[in-house]
Amino acid sequence: QVQLVESGGGLVQAGGSLRLSCAASGNILNIVHMGWHRQAPGKQRELVATATTDGSTNYAESVKGRFTISRDNAKNMVYLQMNSLKPEDTAVYYCKAVKFTGSRFTEFWGQGTQVTVSS
Image (cartoon, rainbow, N blue to C red; front, side, top):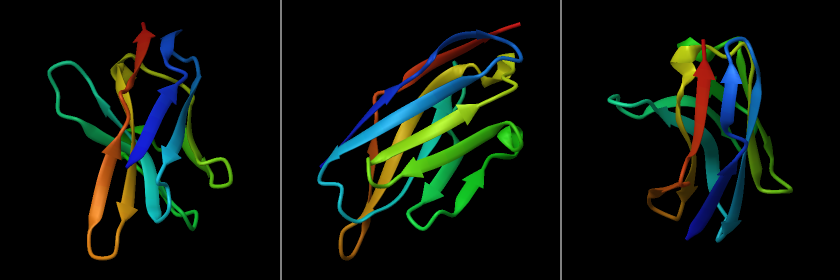
């Protein structure tokens, strides 16, 4: 099992910045990528950004140029730097880890951290 704990959410004005952190613990061997998803009220959970162990990154179009994902493999951490925040970025942000265990991929999720952007 992999445990994920997010931190760094909060209330910020439009145009502001926040940095989310996610700490992974437990059986963290063979985690192939980590990332962030978000879910706004009444909407489906959506991908925000992912980062593979070798450093490749992927972003949702809506956050490109504003958000930056980074990993510290030595500390088993993943971060999401969010700049130029917009009210539509308001959501619960979830950390996700994907682990490869021989023949299949398994997903693990954190509990989520609320990000609220006021206009």
